[in-house]
Length: 126
Image (tube, rainbow, N blue to C red):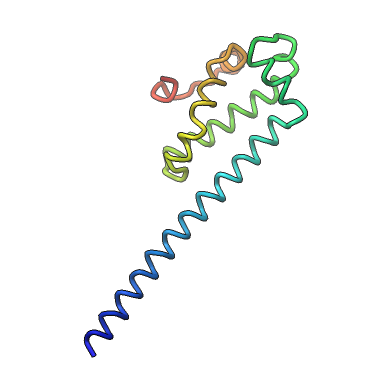
Protein backbone atom coordinates (compact mmCIF):
# COMPACT_ATOMS: atom_id res chain seq x y z
CA UNK A 1 0.00 0.00 0.00
CA UNK A 2 2.82 2.40 0.90
CA UNK A 3 4.55 1.62 -2.40
CA UNK A 4 1.44 2.55 -4.38
CA UNK A 5 1.09 5.79 -2.40
CA UNK A 6 4.76 6.58 -2.90
CA UNK A 7 4.54 5.90 -6.65
CA UNK A 8 1.43 8.04 -6.86
CA UNK A 9 3.17 10.91 -5.06
CA UNK A 10 6.21 10.61 -7.32
CA UNK A 11 4.00 10.64 -10.41
CA UNK A 12 2.23 13.76 -9.14
CA UNK A 13 5.55 15.53 -8.49
CA UNK A 14 6.86 14.59 -11.93
CA UNK A 15 3.63 15.86 -13.51
CA UNK A 16 3.94 19.18 -11.67
CA UNK A 17 7.57 19.58 -12.72
CA UNK A 18 6.71 18.75 -16.33
CA UNK A 19 3.82 21.23 -16.24
CA UNK A 20 6.01 24.01 -14.87
CA UNK A 21 8.68 23.29 -17.49
CA UNK A 22 6.10 23.29 -20.30
CA UNK A 23 4.56 26.53 -19.03
CA UNK A 24 7.97 28.23 -18.85
CA UNK A 25 8.90 27.02 -22.33
CA UNK A 26 5.59 28.17 -23.77
CA UNK A 27 6.03 31.54 -22.09
CA UNK A 28 9.55 31.99 -23.53
CA UNK A 29 8.32 31.09 -27.02
CA UNK A 30 5.45 33.55 -26.67
CA UNK A 31 7.81 36.35 -25.61
CA UNK A 32 10.18 35.55 -28.47
CA UNK A 33 7.33 35.66 -31.01
CA UNK A 34 5.89 38.85 -29.55
CA UNK A 35 9.19 40.71 -29.74
CA UNK A 36 10.00 39.41 -33.21
CA UNK A 37 6.62 40.76 -34.31
CA UNK A 38 7.32 44.11 -32.62
CA UNK A 39 10.71 44.33 -34.36
CA UNK A 40 9.13 43.45 -37.71
CA UNK A 41 6.56 46.22 -37.22
CA UNK A 42 9.40 48.71 -36.82
CA UNK A 43 11.80 47.40 -39.46
CA UNK A 44 9.36 46.13 -42.04
CA UNK A 45 10.70 43.94 -44.85
CA UNK A 46 10.05 46.67 -47.42
CA UNK A 47 12.41 49.09 -45.61
CA UNK A 48 15.02 46.58 -44.46
CA UNK A 49 17.47 47.41 -47.25
CA UNK A 50 17.22 51.13 -46.44
CA UNK A 51 17.56 50.35 -42.71
CA UNK A 52 20.85 48.54 -43.35
CA UNK A 53 22.12 51.44 -45.49
CA UNK A 54 21.14 53.91 -42.77
CA UNK A 55 23.03 51.83 -40.20
CA UNK A 56 26.05 51.94 -42.52
CA UNK A 57 25.97 55.75 -42.63
CA UNK A 58 23.56 56.93 -45.36
CA UNK A 59 22.54 60.31 -43.88
CA UNK A 60 19.50 60.80 -46.12
CA UNK A 61 18.09 57.43 -45.09
CA UNK A 62 18.91 58.16 -41.45
CA UNK A 63 16.72 61.25 -41.62
CA UNK A 64 13.95 59.32 -43.36
CA UNK A 65 14.12 56.40 -40.91
CA UNK A 66 14.54 58.39 -37.69
CA UNK A 67 11.01 57.48 -36.49
CA UNK A 68 11.88 53.79 -36.88
CA UNK A 69 15.10 54.26 -34.94
CA UNK A 70 13.21 55.97 -32.11
CA UNK A 71 10.74 53.07 -32.04
CA UNK A 72 13.65 50.60 -32.10
CA UNK A 73 15.37 52.33 -29.18
CA UNK A 74 12.13 52.25 -27.21
CA UNK A 75 11.78 48.54 -27.97
CA UNK A 76 15.32 47.91 -26.72
CA UNK A 77 14.50 49.81 -23.52
CA UNK A 78 11.41 47.64 -23.05
CA UNK A 79 13.39 44.45 -23.64
CA UNK A 80 16.16 45.59 -21.28
CA UNK A 81 13.60 46.31 -18.55
CA UNK A 82 12.07 42.86 -19.01
CA UNK A 83 15.53 41.28 -18.88
CA UNK A 84 16.38 43.07 -15.64
CA UNK A 85 13.01 42.01 -14.22
CA UNK A 86 13.81 38.42 -15.33
CA UNK A 87 10.80 38.24 -17.65
CA UNK A 88 13.06 37.61 -20.65
CA UNK A 89 15.52 34.77 -20.24
CA UNK A 90 19.24 35.44 -20.58
CA UNK A 91 19.38 32.74 -23.24
CA UNK A 92 16.85 34.62 -25.37
CA UNK A 93 18.55 37.94 -24.65
CA UNK A 94 21.88 36.52 -25.81
CA UNK A 95 20.32 35.76 -29.19
CA UNK A 96 19.37 39.42 -29.62
CA UNK A 97 22.20 41.14 -27.77
CA UNK A 98 24.83 41.13 -30.56
CA UNK A 99 22.53 42.71 -33.13
CA UNK A 100 21.25 45.24 -30.60
CA UNK A 101 24.76 46.33 -29.64
CA UNK A 102 25.83 46.55 -33.29
CA UNK A 103 22.79 48.68 -34.07
CA UNK A 104 23.31 50.92 -31.03
CA UNK A 105 26.96 51.45 -31.94
CA UNK A 106 26.04 52.78 -35.40
CA UNK A 107 26.34 56.52 -36.02
CA UNK A 108 22.62 56.48 -36.87
CA UNK A 109 21.60 55.18 -33.43
CA UNK A 110 24.22 57.31 -31.66
CA UNK A 111 22.95 60.49 -33.36
CA UNK A 112 19.33 59.74 -32.42
CA UNK A 113 20.30 58.82 -28.84
CA UNK A 114 22.21 62.10 -28.50
CA UNK A 115 19.46 64.15 -30.14
CA UNK A 116 16.75 62.78 -27.83
CA UNK A 117 18.95 62.24 -24.75
CA UNK A 118 18.65 58.45 -24.52
CA UNK A 119 20.74 56.96 -21.74
CA UNK A 120 21.04 53.19 -21.63
CA UNK A 121 22.71 51.78 -18.51
CA UNK A 122 26.50 51.91 -18.72
CA UNK A 123 26.74 48.18 -17.97
CA UNK A 124 24.55 47.46 -21.00
CA UNK A 125 26.57 49.63 -23.37
CA UNK A 126 29.86 47.80 -22.64
